[in-house]
Length: 209
Image 1: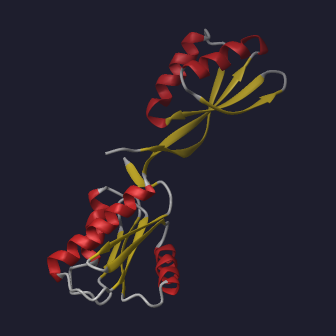
Image 2 (image 1 turned 180 degrees about the horizontal axis):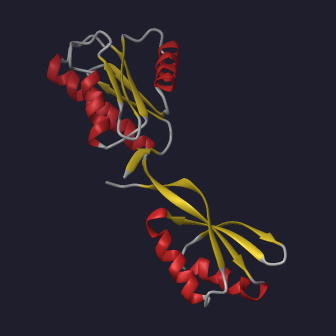
Image 3 (image 1 turned 90 degrees about the horizontal axis):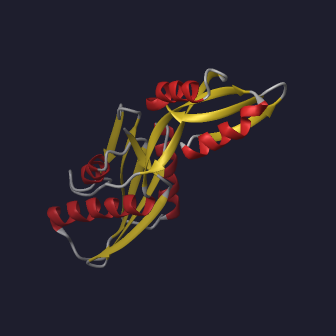
């Protein structure tokens, strides 16, 4: 299962007069991550720290974190672990701190950076990326209404239709059930459909812990 954030988001909380602001974004490369980090630094020029972590790749091939001046292990790692606890991929989190004058101690910093990141994830939402197969279904006009109704009843997403000597319907099905759907369509319409595979794509659905 591939999970990532649903949207870019910002989350802020104040802890003992220090402002902690988490900016989260979806990324596809380290360059994307660096771009957001630089953008946040520019936007919050007067902030005390800009700590961050990011994960890139379907299997988190790239993992980076930075304490950016906070005591070693109190910021970057907690941010990274907060992302990992949610099993997220291709995401960067930058937690900006405006120091409020009261020291939090190592434990307090770890909790602050971790909880602020988790708050950011909650604000962003999580989606699951599911691979889909495109089915190109060639259908006689006489069966068009029945096929449309069948797709609606079985929650098969119709992308578009091409009308010529017959109707070619482009339908998206989850890759995991593609073979089952082909067999069901063939049986339901007594071999009167011609079904071919098109390209694959990904769709995203909300995910809840």
